[in-house]
Amino acid sequence: MRTIDWNDSKNNIVMIDQTLLPGEYKVIECNTIDSLCEAIKTLRVRGAPALGAAGGFGVALSAFRSNASTLDSLLGDVESASNTIIATRPTAVNLSWGVNRTLKAIEDANNVKEVRSFALDEAKTIANEDVEKNMQLGEHGAALLEDGDTVMTHCNAGRLACVDWGTALGVIRSARAQGKDIKVISCETRPLNQGSRITTWELMEDKIPVTLITDSMSGHVMRKGMVDSVIVGADRITQDAVFNKIGTYTHSIIAKEHNVPFYVAAPVSTFDFERFEDEIEIELRNPEELKFFGKHQIAPLGVNVYNPAFDATPMEYVTAIITENGVFNPPFLLDEVKLRR
Image (cartoon, rainbow, N blue to C red; front, side, top):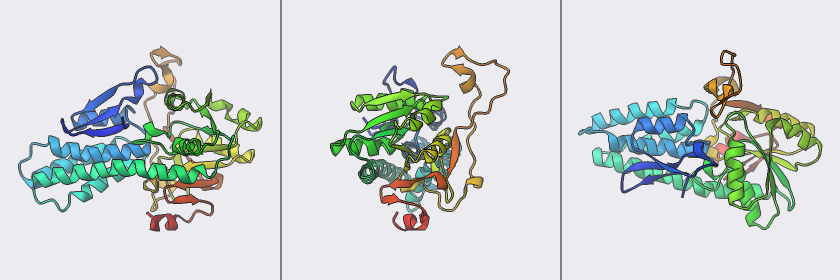
């Protein structure tokens, strides 16, 4: 199934619970805005494109769950729920993009029924477009890979970070579909191990050769010539930086030092054309994520913890950005990307 979808028979959201992987594959339901927000905060659903779909479906869910009988009161309920959804994760731009796009779709609604219908149609369109755009992105990115290449990736930018197919892993899937022998080195991605738990699981499901390393081994493997390119996803791309899972910036510096191409794969919806790095709030997560590994305490309970979810990679470290509209090389003409949206 898709990572996140709409259940027409129950008018609710269904998604794969990614916190249980790789030990258990389970599909859960979100029947309320509170349950959706909990799923987003706890990373049951995660990844920029998937969060875009979650935002769209969240607006639809709020419309279906509201008891409002008039158009104005329903729109008030939907707006309140939308603000709550957006606030759950401030760094990834796709969540607010999905919410705002769906809100715009209901502006012309004349009654309660139309609000629900327009919102759901737009949310489904967002989800369907995500799959299509990721496959287009994958085709563009596959041209950058040679038969026999080994690609290093960080965190998870596969189908579980999207509605389906994936961004960084979508490039690899497309290259493999073209008959290219591509192998992957996956960084574990502390502290929540999305690389070891999710990326390796995805690739093994697809029978794509993958080797797991710790985050701190990336310099070693690149210095040893074990990596032909690095491909990562993105949660927001501003005029001057790429925001992605914490640790990405470090890999970009090491890649540049060793002349390894560093690619970012992301749909155009991830671009935030009007803003710069210093204007973006980086989400700080629960200190317990560093004090415990699962249920096992691995640090003193009283230790001070700094736990940002993302870092910013300056554009000078990015070789190219792969989008559904093509591959963009430096200097990055983001206005050109914007015109081609």
